[in-house]
Amino acid sequence: MTWSSSAAASPDYPPRWQQPRAAPGSRFWSARRKKSAADKEWQSHPAMRTLRPLAARKDSLRTVLQTTLLRRVAEASPGAPWSIAATRFLLFADAADVVGFSGSVFEAPDGRQVMIAPAADLIDAQTRAAPFGQRVAILAVERRWSFPAPEWIAADSTFWRSPATPP
Image (cartoon, rainbow, N blue to C red; front, side):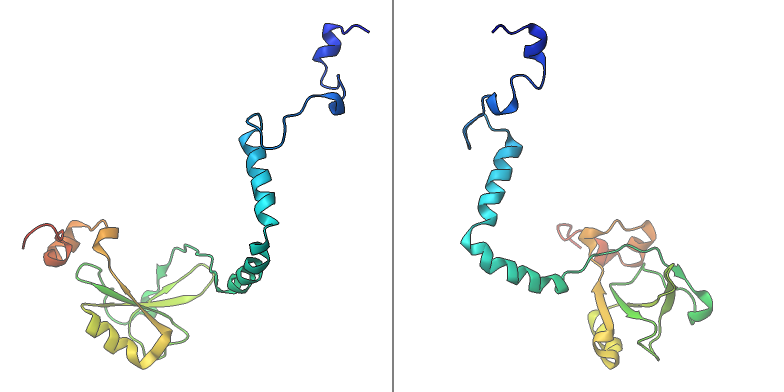
């Protein structure tokens, strides 16, 4: 039997079962195939029988973060809008859960309302949040994660100065 060039170039010739194959784990295996084999080996490892139930228990604790653009509801926010310029701590609360809490009201596209209030220091933030317990979250403004506007720096230059810069 002779092979013609067209038969040899055909993807069906020789039949797949006659085509040479690389030995499992050999250097001729593709990276994807090696990863697939390693994944299968790891998934069948005895330790996975212990880890799978633990991972399933933690699924309820995992939260998917979502970014939402809020708009200030002026008619529901007493006083002038606050500025982050001299703010070191922010108090966040669901507006429905904190009757009597004072802050600016912001609304998400789905209708949820959030109250945000500034605090100059941690003691002020803790004092204002205490009557509401876990319903008010206190977040610190972190200068390393911020790109402050010039007016923020002017309002609190000590805070926004780099720790390496002497006062």
